Image (cartoon, rainbow, N blue to C red; front, side):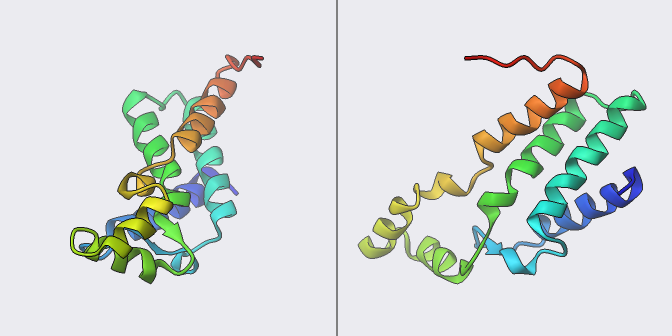
Length: 133
């Protein structure tokens, strides 16, 4: 995969996030135009290319990090149940219990762990990766 192929994959994936129906938290993982693994790989290829070309900056890093970290939280199997529970959250104790068991409404925000993973990759590209612990 080259930089331009990676950029297209990222843009297609980002378009899926932008096209999430109003009122929904998540979309079906199988609606993605590429597998989650290929999408993650595209982020790494594209990021490394931008760094090597001197085009990478904080704004790009933050945007890519947030988008990368949304893959696992915004695209799930059987999204209808989650979206229905979100719509009923204020009206139904059962819906609240269901969402709370999944981490509540904040569980569908970008994953902190995946943001860290992405930032660690960026550090590694710059030669600043240090193992700790």
